[in-house]
Figure (cartoon, rainbow, N blue to C red):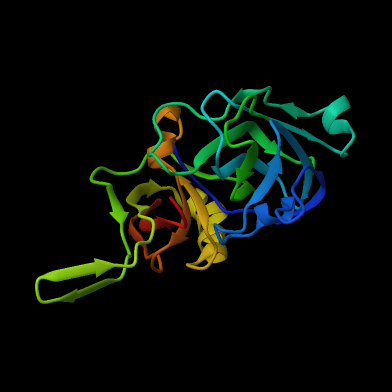
Length: 256
């Protein structure tokens, strides 16, 4: 099972449907409360990115599994409709089982890196009971991929709710529980490390949130395995033998 990590590229909003106080530009911001929203059952947007990419992901949406997302890429905004270089077609927003109360995650991958800079996203949610479409973050970037994570990966459900206790009583300020994934990746080649991993790790540190999909092909489990959040500590990279690098990272989601 392939594992991918994606650092979000910056993007500029060209056009898009949005409520006045929930603009498309909120999708470039990391605080989960700064959402994009549009009233109704359909929505579209066009953004311009500043570097090649192969992954488009919509994080923390209220989309249902039978709602649809379509991604088109082209050299100009107009060409995303008339002559796209990539067209995902309208695909289900997600599949499998999602944790109650958690936002949905939609990941769309291109077969190779896209050099065209304009990305159009169309969403359909007919009959949605919320009466609106909403999402927390749009992640567009070029994935760093590895064949598989090592055995003994860990998933932790982190509850940071402050507690107050006294004789025979306890109380909490309740905060959402978020997912945390710890995984190791071994046998990273020297070529891959120097060309992809070192620049990636240098860029993200612990301050830039990343999209981490430990089992990319298992789309029915993306809702309970994919996380978008910060690396929790600096990542040591070991070099135990020629042409071999090993690393371990822990990623904690920003929101459920």
